[in-house]
Amino acid sequence: MANTREIQSRMKSIQDTMKITNAMYMISSTKLRKAKKNLEETEPYFYTLQTMVSRIVRHLPEIDNKYFDERKDKPAGEKTTGLIVVTADKGLAGAYNHNVLKMAEEQMQKAGQTGSYKLFVVGELGRQYFGHRGIKVAEQFHYTAQNPTLHRARIITETILEQFEEEQLDEVYIIYTNMVNSVTTEPQMLRLLPIVKERFITKDGQDLSMYQDPLVMTPSPKAVLDNIVPDFVMGYVYGALVESFCSEQNARMMAMEAANKNASTMIHDLSIQYNRVRQAMITQEITEVIAGAKAQKKKKKARKEVLNN
Image (cartoon, rainbow, N blue to C red):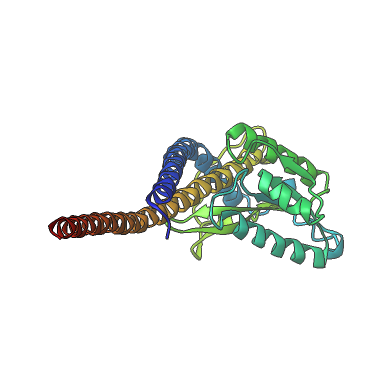
């Protein structure tokens, strides 16, 4: 059985670890609130862009634009799919990275069966994961996972738009983690390019093309789309980056909370063990004192008998 000093040492070590996990919990909580606030402040702008694209498509459903190009004339076996995979730079986030990487591998396998794919990675853990498996990463966007800003979202967007326009990419998807609520997160895949016009014409099964309000576009509808679609796509990229970041922080908070609960249980068990060991030591000391007193009493009695004889 461990002695009291060993038990106290274990308890101190656990308590020191809890200080670290508590600090990590608070840091993640602060980062999550800040990221959500930043996203909420930019959402009205991107919603406005989405509304504008929707109005153009509703008024001119036959409009042709490079960002709507489905590449129908290109054989399926010659198409290249771009996959943007959003992971973290750090661990200690439960199954956060595992789930999104698993979905990415499924989509890579699917794209490889009908054509080819190019991999774009956000997050150091994703880069290491694919690197260890010998999977080539076309480009990694450094420092983005821990700092999802509009500037970094624009860099990603410009990269994929350029390659899409040059037909190096025929489809582009972003795979990220969506924060459903404070308890649940789930990996999702969103198609960025080409833009599906139909989703702007119908909503919940309702045909929106019947609503024809006046719309004037200068210098032309094509020029307007060429200018607003890049920012529109960037809005989706930024939203995915922030959702992933918030999901990571939430997962880390849950992991730290679970660690603290386990640590509290361990301290409780060690406290009981400490009290038992301490009680056993006290009992042993009392027993030894009593035994010593009895021995002294017997010794005195024996001496007295010797003197009397």
